Figure 1 (spheres, helix red, strand yellow):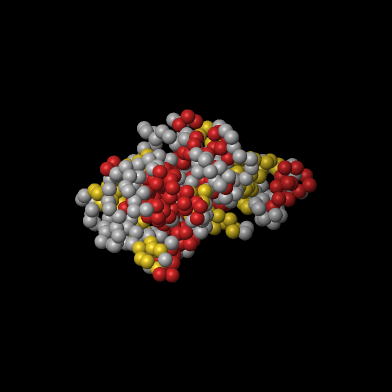
Figure 2 (cartoon, one colour):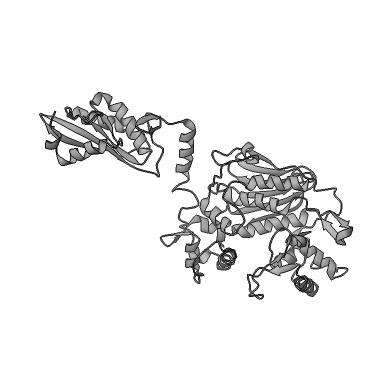
Length: 489
């Protein structure tokens, strides 16, 4: 054995590093397979070195390093999947012997690696086969780390294809609840950068989903399909619409469609001296499911869409793509991990306050349904789509609203008094904030008639509703909301 103090400085450093137990020592190429398994484990944990020719106690024995040795290493290296770069270095120690140093760097974007079809990991100072559950979880993370559909460049889209008004509407909403720090953005490009929707000055596909104006021919999947069917099958349409638009506007359209077709049974509560309306489905629960469909769907399915189907006996929400790996329909009704297929899109929705990041959205929906006295929704996977079904009686309930197609909706209807308009405005706002034009549409009005304006002014004066931007009553981004839970009855 060559004395340590006469070895090359580089090798002395490697021997010293061995005391930290970060290295695996081998004495011959006959154990090359085991060495490669250890390299695989190092690659799955951020990188490391395997030294061949030094015993675990630090004794340097060296070995002959021939051309055949190099061929053996190259052959073993080809058995990694994905392909891995192994740096091979020979440190001569005299007497035609050398020490081989095999190094792999950390490649977090490509983890997990396998050698001969198996993944390995380091536990302490040992190498072992990775558990299948851990391997599948890492596979999912790899698939959604750097190369997701949403974070690829939208080469077909320019800044002119982005809806500036929609960007600043959502940005203002986010800033109003304190979920975006820093000075307000004045330029569209700055606003998009603040929301993480550009990379090196270029638009991401997520920007198109959230704020696009142009969807055909390159982004047909940004589609919402709405239908009210007569009966319990898809035989006859009572109303249908197909829309393409930015995600937040699609959400609002779906909510308006629900308001138009869900019955609102009501009763008089003597102590409150007014009607108390009970929504068919709790508005927050319905919104949560619609948001989930927008946020978690698989946008890589070009022909995919989100569908809201209303039948006499149920309401269904379909979104393109299976549930993410690790999530099953059964798990959504109990505690489960939060797995985000589109984290950039989810982050913008989170900043608006529409979703949380703790994977409790579906649990909250179940709780709201139980509190409302209806069955919790059913979660299923059907022909590659995620499906949520509310088993509720849409037809045959008292005081059901008359059905009408959007194109045949009357321009305006006379009301018996401003109070009836006020009640309808309050009912519409139970599902969330709405602009004046959105409120008018939800009431089946064309334009904004004077009686409608008077009802809004009266509700503002009474403190039943309020502006979302109090400092700027005339803002083009202005919306209305209920002032308190009491206003929601």
